[in-house]
Image (cartoon, rainbow, N blue to C red; front, side, top):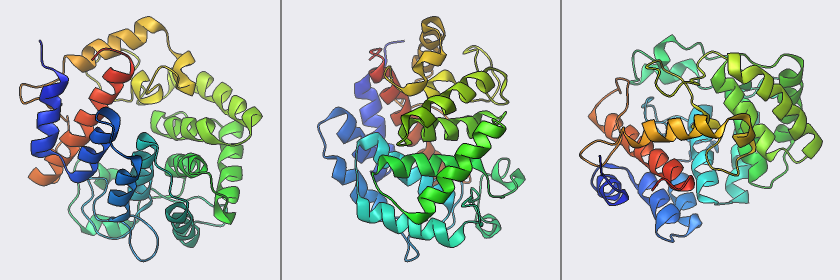
Length: 287
């Protein structure tokens, strides 16, 4: 197969939403990181949170922690910092958090809107490490201080160290916290806990040839200098890169393997997946 980055670019220009197109410009065409921040701000509601189906599987307009995590992740990918946005997000998270600072992925009201029926309808929205640890890491990356961020970070660190999660998505959130928590000793402690828990975690896809659903080493080691890169052998990384490269379709994009809420959501997700694929392949020098 000889599909190229050019084909992926064409797919993004013809199918993807503005956020992924802006991210592509930053990653591959010298675009300004602030352009991604401008797009993310368009998803912000008056309460400070991000909404409007920013994560394409849930089509509600109300602010949700899941959407907020998605938007902050886009800013991280672009290298965009916006202290004012980050602080307003913290105010929103403080307003919805429990007494320990934890927040759920989303609230039950989100399920009144169309969703990916075979996915989110079966998730119980309770406060936890996923997404709180991820949000904390991404907000530390923004270089801010906030009462909620301090409290939530303490809670997440204690939870991870006392009982490391045995599920890959929660461990990925822990890894984001480890990457950006200001205290380097704590970061090292978190990485030790993650390294012990990940090989046996549910939904961790160590074998690139497996057909099962799961997060792969490339989700944890998004580029060669990622904090989690040391957790994986080079042969394991190479195998996942080869499989990822071979998944490109003739239209230039990458597929999704679940049923999205509708055609718009499916194309939005394919834009996300395509950008993710070419970013990882580029970072490792495959394309």
